[in-house]
Length: 151
Image 1 (cartoon, rainbow, N blue to C red):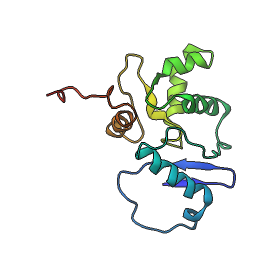
Image 2: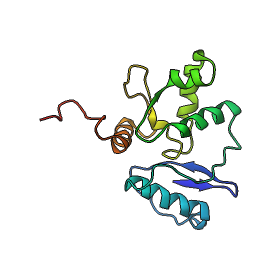
Image 3: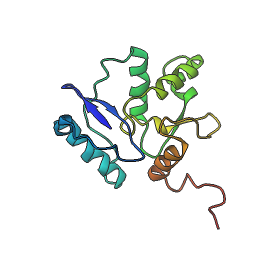
Image 4: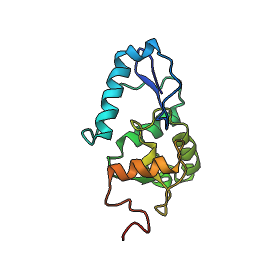
């Protein structure tokens, strides 16, 4: 599901199943057309960076600062909540970073799936842990091997 304003993409949620069908006039919105194209390129491993305008006008300044850092995490790399809090100048804001990460309305493009625990473990993801693992494995297949899959 995706939504856009005149200023940019406001929402992108990757759905496990197709919605029950209703054709929105907004699906003809130029930003949504470009979003669909770029996300498909990402899943086809033909795109590493998105260039879609984003509209975060409804978000707090703190959320915007966290999401800006998320966008800077390169494809195939991860950061911990603590690393992001440190980058914001206050290691004690790790939980607030987690909250902002969890409230990210623009999945994939603002890559909240690239945030992991300080011990390297996978932590919560609005799309589910299986989806988070699949996205990380798509971006860095050599790193994200599940135990037991070696033989």
